[in-house]
Image (cartoon, rainbow, N blue to C red; front, side, top):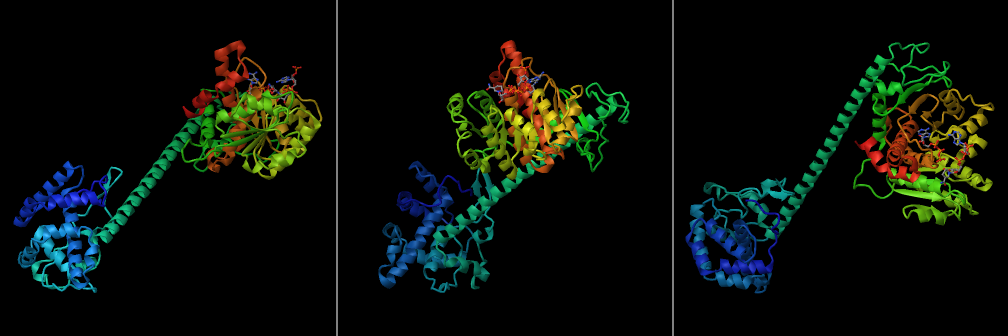
Length: 615
Ligand SMILES: NC(=O)C1=CN([C@@H]2O[C@H](COP(=O)(O)OP(=O)(O)OC[C@H]3O[C@@H](n4cnc5c(N)ncnc54)[C@H](OP(=O)(O)O)[C@@H]3O)[C@@H](O)[C@H]2O)[C@@H](O)CC1
Ligand SMILES: Nc1ncnc2c1ncn2[C@@H]1O[C@H](COP(=O)(O)OP(=O)(O)OP(=O)(O)O)[C@@H](O)[C@H]1O
């Protein structure tokens, strides 16, 4: 028998009355009286109930009748003693009307059942049993021990239907039918005793408990299954990744036949312009150090050779870093709440420059941050707000308590972009400096761009050595920084070498030197991103990059350490952001050509993101 989960276990009064009306009919009673087996009678009863709109199985009807009979007989017995007991049986009067003509017969039937002891759930045997139960004393002992006892529960365990799947309550044994052979009928029957004192309601309660337990088990197992599935997929993914890396390694090996660092012809995609910064071919991966790890391994000598890879779309080398970026991107799931994928702060926006902080903040949102805060001057705020209702704009940057006001938000921020549209007013730079200092104490990734770099050029110590700092200079800003650090003119013939030197001088800070090709270095490793970008150099493209980088940096630093396979998270984030920016610029440029604006580029973020990281 399968209990349909849509049918309630409990019977309403209306249902019970309908059942009693049918069951009490003369024809039904006669059919039950005259038949040893009664399943067909209850089938008819159930069908007729169904016609009245009550969906019950024959077994449910039979069990309900039994329960009513038990209550009736108990009440009747009790009633003999105190005259009030019958109040415990809600349907006493109906039962009385139906059974009064049968009670004598049932008492007679006790004897016949004692002899017959058939295993079927016949009506008369049930009556016997019910009468026995009614005669049990408080200790649970039955005064009719000479009669065989049958439990009233179905002979098979009742499966529970959970979410379309059937499972069984864990403690089935207590619900199975006990049919002791006639020869042992005089022995005390333990299982009977165990249930004898329990009302049907109690047993149903117990059964419901077990059903819920079964349901819990089902969900627990389902969760385990899903977790195992996730793990399997992840393993498969990293296997594929490793294969790709090995392939990349093989291709690199083919295009650079000699591993010697000096005087060897370099592959065209890895231009070497300065012999003092030789290119080192990464050793082949082994079991302990897969290719990706050795490729990005650190060098202890600060001015030593950088490990360089040049990437452009379509090459296997590109394919080996983009998967690392992907690994840091949090999955989209309904399990998270607002803000968990990124709360980014932009420090910038003054009277002259309202576009830059807007570009950075909106790019952060489009890349995948949940919340974007702009901390700007009082007069810039209404303008920035009017661009987009999606940004949270704080007009505090030029206020008397700017630092304290902004510091209040720092515990909520995952990364900070300092500089877009900041301007160079002394007071604003001072506030920005203090915010950087306080953010460092909290370990917040800090991206410094535009006028923020002006500040760094004046006071390098503000960010020097902070491993979660990333500088994103254009060439002009880079020159300024370089000269401030080295006190000598920049040798503009070798951008990579200069970038490496500046990074080292800044305490191995990650540097993104933007240009025709973007150079990314932490002084030990170097990535170049030279995929096709835009032919347009409209203002604001750098803001798009810094806003995006704010998000990628948060994701990279909050990923498990193995996500980036040992690579500096800043490099992974910077590569992700520059690739995305160039892809956006390119897509927009292909659509709008000479009239391309930064807003057009920002419009391309979602499709570029999909293409690069979700395809
Ligand atoms: N809509 C807005 O609100 C926008 C606001 N913005 C905000 O403006 C603020 C100031 O930023 P900025 O970039 O104008 O100042 P800075 O870096 O001193 O450059 C000054 C001069 O340097 C040169 N130069 C620049 N790049 C070069 C290169 N690659 N290679 C060679 N030279 C290069 C070039 O000199 P030129 O060629 O004109 O002589 C340029 O004029 C800052 O807060 C920023 O966020 C912008 O984001 C744009 C959108
Ligand atoms: N010559 C170029 N060819 C292709 N892409 C470029 C070129 N120069 C810069 N870019 C790209 O444009 C983006 C912004 O770089 P850009 O040098 O314009 O920054 P910026 O001057 O700081 O911008 P902003 O106008 O926001 O201050 C970078 O991601 C870079 O990859």
